[in-house]
Amino acid sequence: MKKTIFSLLIMTCFAFSDNEEPKVTTYSYGHNGMEYVAKNKNGTVIISTFNSKMTIRQEIATKIYRMYLDQKLQSDQKVTVFGDEADVTGRCVIRKKDNLTAVDFYYETVSWCSGKKEIYKKNI
Image (cartoon, rainbow, N blue to C red; front, side, top):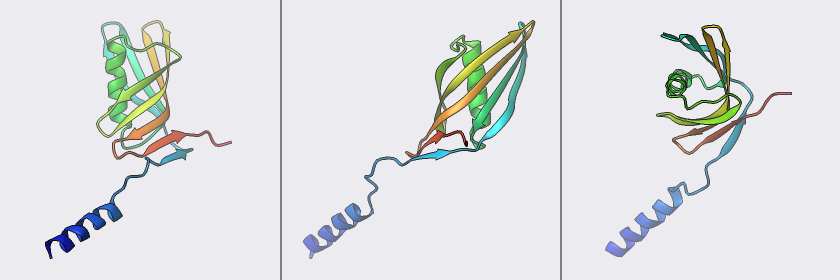
């Protein structure tokens, strides 16, 4: 009897396990706009995100600002931002004029903690 119950338990574990590779999907929508504005001793910094996911856009913008302050960002370079819900890879463009700095971050891929991966694909 114990062997039968144990066998049934093992078979149900295999039947309901999700051992497939994470599913990769594309998206062609996203939120564009200014997410974070900060004033510091050097002037004003505006963090804008493009093609972002609504649920993580504020957190990612805050982390981009911290990376900017730590001088870990360079213009026209791919950057990976590690968030609580997802890791985002994208391209960062930094523009400066007088005491105003604009940091534009363009989402390219979003790797969710659940294993799902989304790639931004421009709608033609």
